[in-house]
Amino acid sequence: KHVLLEKPACLTVREIDELMALSRDYEKTIFVGYMRRYAPAYLAARDELPAHEDITHVRIFDLISEGRHFLKKSQNVLYPQDIDPAILSRGAEERDTLIREVVGKDASAELVRAYRGLTALSSHHISAMRGLLGEPRRVVAAHRTNGGANTSVTFDYGHFACLYDAVVDDLGLFDAMIEVRSNTKRVRIIYDTPYIRSLPMRLEVTEAGPLGPVTKAFGPLYGDAFSNELETFHRHIMEGTKPLTDLADSRRDLALMAEIIARMRESGGK
Image 1 (spheres, rainbow, N blue to C red):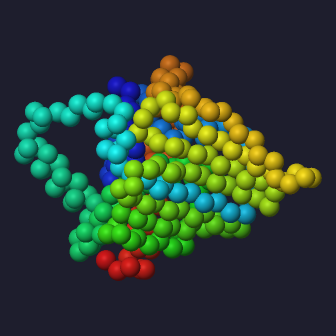
Image 2: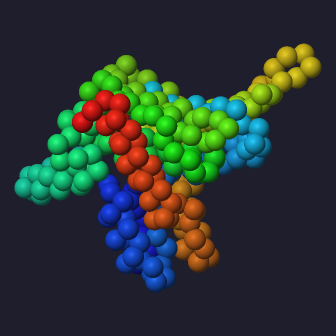
């Protein structure tokens, strides 16, 4: 069967290595769903980026509130009530065991929460970062605050740094953006919320001009990232082509997340 996996496919590098070994000769499509990499604004931004050697700085942030702040105002979500509590309990225990493979058996609740955030919210932008910029050389620094809900990471790209911040609060706002700068150009991909489908995403490009900065706004781009993702999955199935977001790609995200946790342990203890 063709398979679409929710990002980041697994919680540990060990698990994904086992999957990759099993899928080596698998002839069907295995696609990992990183929907932000299929958003129209993201796809359009790739053609607007400064040349890689001209990039001077990148900042990425997720300053958000959880879905309940948005969904209760916009749609009725049906939650199943017929799942055996024992199954839910066993799933939670297994998830905790897998997380502690990465953060350590002695890890604090803060560090566990930080890793849960990395593999949930942050996995979108870590993957999107790599899709735009390529692989970072290393994680220079990482720190968590607010009980592990907030994360700050610095990625080393050689001649520039990429700064990532994730903040989760109860303000009821969603502010997510990727900004890539050179000395004369700024490209911004703006995601207002991923919780409500078909809301527009924005792409803004600002360049230095003879009379001062000139900003071009693309859109609003109403194409739905989830729909685009599914259409891309279907195209790979029909054409027999290889997805960009496959297991090997997801593995690189998990390896970076493990490195982030290692830096967090160095800066903030277990």
